[in-house]
Image (cartoon, rainbow, N blue to C red; front, side, top):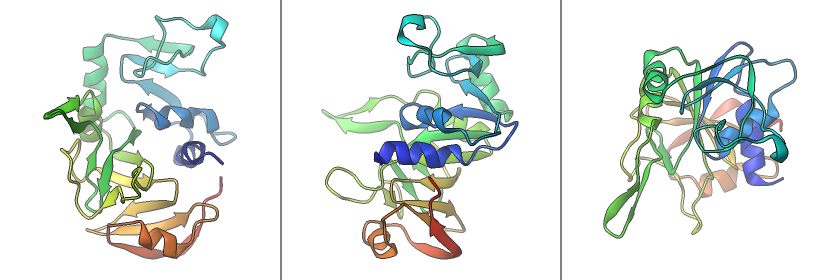
Length: 219
């Protein structure tokens, strides 16, 4: 299975019926394609939409109806469209039940860095609304590849990049594992199909303990 599809499928299992859900750019938006049967949620897009529906056919796509990543979407009955300032206010207010954010780094303290890398002496590209989501949402899920292109861990003892949110992440989902964030330590809950505990230990910088219920992801 494509690692990004695996992550998106596992992320979708975090959603509970009736929740108001924000999905960040990239992998998080794909989670909407894999909702568990019988689970109905309302999706929010940062650019100002409550009630985001499935991706339309190419022939029905409109450049005026997109999510925050400029991907075409549909609107469900009862959807609401608003200006960006109102949408950001809603994100800060605490009404969202869960937000899923892509990440460059996460750490065992529940910190997340997802907005900047250093290029040509400058931090790029910019923070967007992720900081508002980290502040205003009780349940923050971070999803990312477990290692970078050189094989270095992206699940760290302490983030090295500028933070997006501090001590806000509750769950970390990678292509190799699922962690819950405990008290200054991660709790390993699940492993991806075909991934061993030893492999996770080898590619994880962060300190973690193994849950008594440690099992394989059901994806």
